[in-house]
Every structure is written in C-alpha cells, then in structure tokens.
Length: 507
Ligand SMILES: [Zn+2]
Image (cartoon, rainbow, N blue to C red; front, side):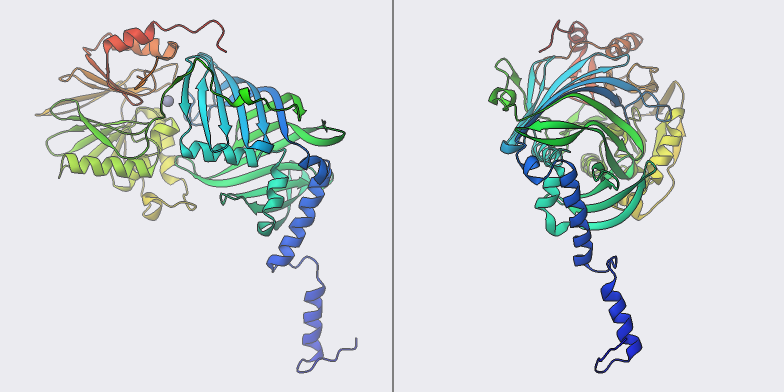
C-alpha cells in the first residue's frame, strides 16, 4: 500500500479508503438513493419497461373477491364476517379519472351496488340501488387521486416522478422470498414502501403506515401476485391479477381480476353522473350542533355520526363516542357549553364498530367510565392500549387503563330528574351486541346503524337488521327515533323504511 496523505497516518488513511470503497455503506442520502434507484429501475424493467408503462393510458379491470369486515363484524373477537364482491373499474391515468363499480353481497345482509367516480378535481359516489348521488367531499377526492397515483399499474412511475425521495431500506423476507425494499414519499407526503421480489424484480408488495383511531399505528399492505402480460399497443406490460389488502396483519380484501385490458379508450360517460340520479350533499363535517330532545336530553349532531347527551343532577351520560379524538373533543366542548359545570361520568357506545368506538380513547383519557356489554371488554382494553406514536392523542400522552362497567340486558341510569335506559337488543344481524338508548319520559330512542334516517332522499331497501330493530321496539313506548346517522324521525319514518323493497335489477 503506497499512501501519501499529508497530516494523516497511513492507518487512518486506510480506514477512509475502506469506507469510500464500500458500496453498501448506507450512511448517506446519496448512497441510499442510488441503491433505491437501481431497484426501482429494475422493477420498471420487470414490468415491461419504462416506454411500455408510459404508453399505458387507461386500464379496465373486472374481478371478483371477498371483503372482510374489519371493525364491522358481529363480534370484536371472532373471525371477521365477509361479503362477496364484484368489481368493475376503469382507471384513466392520462386524464386523471377513475370509475369503480362495486357490488357487495354481505352474508346475512342485503346487496349494495355503488359507483365511485373521480374526474379531475371532483368526484361522486352513486348508489345504483337508491339512485342517490353524493358529491365527494374534498378528503374523498384527495383519497381517490392518491389511489389513482398508487394504482399498481402506475405506482412505479409515481415513485420515479418523486425520485428525490427514493431511499433504500435493504432486504426483507416476504413469504419466504428475499425482497429488496425501497421507499418514496408521494406528493401528499405518504411514505410508501415498495417490495421487489429479488428473483423476478417484480413488485410483490407495497405498504403505508398511518394512524387508525381504533387500531393505533396501523400498517396497510397491498400484496400483488399472479402477474400476467397485458398488451399496450404493440408492447406488453406485466400487471398483477391478484391484490390482497391487509391492515395490521388482517386480510381486509382479496381481489382477483379476470379481465385486465389496457388502452381501450375510457369513454366520458363512465365518469358522468347518471341522468336520473338524485343529488344529495354529503354529511357535513365540522361543528357540533345541539338539538334539545326533552328537558334534559340533547342530540349532538353536525357531522356524519351523532351522539346523545343525557343530563342528570350532578353528571352527564354520553351515548356514542364515534370517529376519533377530534370529534370527541368537539362533542365534549359542546356539552360543557350547553350544561356548564356538569362532568361527563359515563359513556355508552352502541356497538364496537370502529366508526362508533373510535372516539372512546378521549373519554378513557378523562377517566370517564365506559359502560358496555361483556363482549366488548377485551376490545375496549385493546383500543385503550393501542400505541398511537404516529399521531399521538390525549390518551397516548397520559396513558391510563380504561374504567369499564359491563351490563347484560339493560342498564338503567336514574335520579330524581329522570331515567335513561341502555338496552342490548342483540343479537342483531348488524352486530351481536347492539345497544339502543331509551328515554321513557321523552318516548325517544337513540339507535345506531340498525335504522338510519337520511336527511334527504329515499330510504334504502329494508334489511334484516331494520326488521329486527322494529320488532324489538314493540315493547317500548316510542314517538321519536333519534339515529346516530341522519335526522330525527318518527315511527312513521320507520314504517316507511320497512316498506322499501330491493329494486329488481339495480343498474
Ligand atoms: Zn355498525
């Protein structure tokens, strides 16, 4: 070794030379980028090459599969219930449009058929059963745009367009096979991990990490397989015909495409509103509104999910803590403003479904007792213990164990001012333990999901859960029905909803 370096001993010079020569030294952004770039370029080549992928203007897919109802099943600790799915989609990458039609046939439920459309900077959801069209809220438009950018067919081009954010994460074994893993940050900031099969170079998986109100820090994985050749003009690309989605390790969707066609020419009418659609605005997001239901009961609405507050001599009982911490804090603030000085002592979730329990952590953080049915105890404990390091909430900042009180059948809250009964009317076809809240004096019942009263537009076809709810109501004197979704209604509304039948051929 002949080294002539001023000011450095031969030993130190040797050390520097060794570092500089090592190709796997991951200590710099440039090295990590270069490694990732090689892996990405090899992945693009394995899918048919840059030119062929860039020539892909639109894609039509037809498939079938199974949806798994994570956070929406019968019991929180049993196997997830499923629904059969049929899907037809058109992705118009060239013009930023997508149209996805999904038919869901849930076990024990009734079929839904919906179309979700993105067209430039707007979009809508359309029910082919009720013919109701709902313009997409800004969040839904952003989500649809992200889904289009991260479609498996163009995901590698999206990563390439964000080249400055590419980094290598080294190797990982996926299903017994060595994968090379890289990551990039999408234009919305979403960090996306890309896993390439080391043998074929094909993308085998991509994943993202985000906060989930019920699950905590949650990984969403999309596992790609059954690659097949798809003609793009005279070229060919290789695209996955099977896509399995997992959230925190649980399969939530398993789709197999039988038709994958490129550049068939996306027709404008696929993205247009159907002529006979009834347009109804989406549920508002934001401020909590208060409606007095009686001397001491209040409906807290003004969003997609309502809560009920019942005021006693020295405390308040809240029924339903939906969505997330943001919603809980807004509801709590509104209660404090409406009935100052009365602390919330109990919160009663109607059922465990994630959208109806996502706000419970905020109540746990404040030491509010959760009153629920026995099947939800372990779920509430898990929810309270779930790590939220990505997006800390009040409970993760000051962790504590939930105070849980369980009841079977009925629990009555009573003092000199009145009575609130929470009643488990389950097993319901919607969820096994299904709690409604009953105010005998007001002759009012609060109900979640079993009966929804649209603010505008028609009722959907009556389903088994509605029929079950209606039967259970027969033992109670009820004038007013207060739903967790929608507007306050009457027994006449229930009668009208029960009469709605499934149309013959929704299309
Ligand atoms: Zn539900």
